[in-house]
Image 1 (cartoon, rainbow, N blue to C red):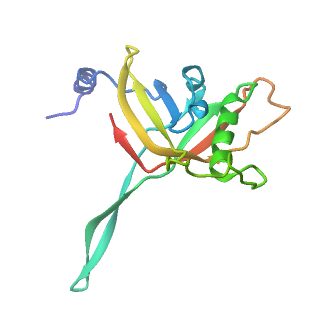
Image 2: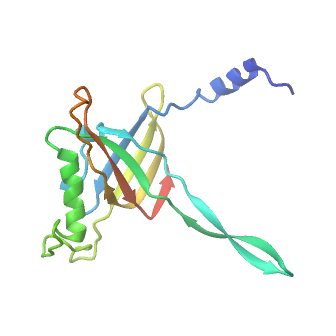
Image 3: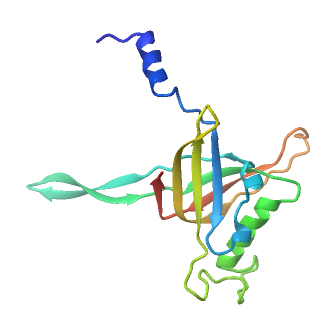
Length: 182
């Protein structure tokens, strides 16, 4: 079989065309405190995200001086999002509050409200993220659930007088245990 542009185009068209990286939506829910979850009007301010990946490590076992590789455990890199900042800092405040609930106030003080990783019932302040690819017709496509999610890094917001025509944005890195597909 020879390669032709016509064959490539026909094959791509038969699979719905290529998925577009700018057609997606992200939802982030805190499992314990719904007030820390992003509502539907806030989720559109997530400018960039990714479909999570995973890695299966190899475990070498030496046999007669030669390493034989076996499958090891699955690991997940942290998940990153870029968020557009609104003038009220609504989403940033929710993320900071989520971090305070888990680790205490900014000065490290802990009390009954701040600094407990779990509630009295044993439920952890972890959430769930969902990344959904949107099809070109506007319908939901493939969906990925990111489980046991919590913010691990809230990036600084750069301020600069020479950039008057830009809107602030910042990155948030999320730690999680697993992800599932659809």
